[in-house]
Length: 382
Image 1 (cartoon, rainbow, N blue to C red):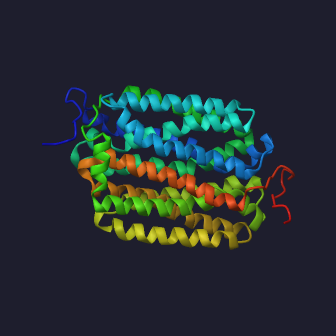
Image 2 (cartoon, one colour):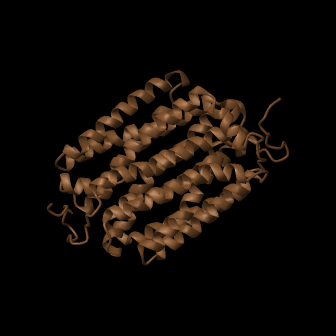
Image 3 (tube, rainbow, N blue to C red):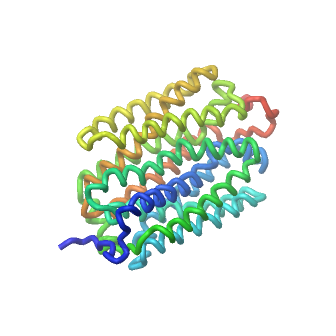
């Protein structure tokens, strides 16, 4: 007997609607992850405006990620028998409100409170949305649709952050939060318009979570995710002050560098998504090795061309990594998609927070607020 509740035949979208539905979920994933990581590119402007250390601003990511880690598990279980379309719409509503509060915040405390709402939205939307694709499209279309939805995570990391940085540089950091609020509201309307009714599954419980963890491959992918994501975000969260200190990169050039990183990341996302399943493990190993090499080299580069080259390799590697990890997970526990996805998202988010905390040792106590508009920020003398 199947333990997965199917989408009702009355509400399953017609073939012409499949890709509209899938793209809507992918846009929702893009919106929540962009909101979570937005402070990365705005680290220095926020710190300067609120007169706080850049390390303190970096903890905005930690707060959202820790809350998202708990939210992924709790929303999946506590949503009970609620229609999953209703759950996704609610998570997007929370996101919109949280980003509006962020945009008008006049203190770090208020901004941190708003990040709690972002964390609830990120964990709940990603965990539920990641498990829906096999129930929304015909079986032959599942691999392709899954790659599209999961690419929203990678593209948010490699395009959403640079775009927010660009907007923040030219219109102020608050405008970036306004923009993601508008995006979240548009996607909320799209979810209500395009998604069918999606009943809860019977494995969406704490018992289902425990049973999925008995699968060795699920444990393997979760451990790998934890290690890789901590390493990545320990470096990526503080890439702005590191590049300013080591390579003399001014804030005005940061958005351009992150755009290169983003373009390479999109290429990596879709290159790996197009590979046959039998090559996924080899490609994942290769991209993780390239990711580690890029992180080791970035503090050593000097000059804009070298920075761009290494950041492009870094983007290529990281753009491919989440898609490979998600694909590995789905093939490891096809009968426990929702609880396994909740665990994966939870660990992914805790790893982001852990990376931000580890990386904070390189930034805590420093502040860019004394820099001129074109001067690179450098740490004070010890």
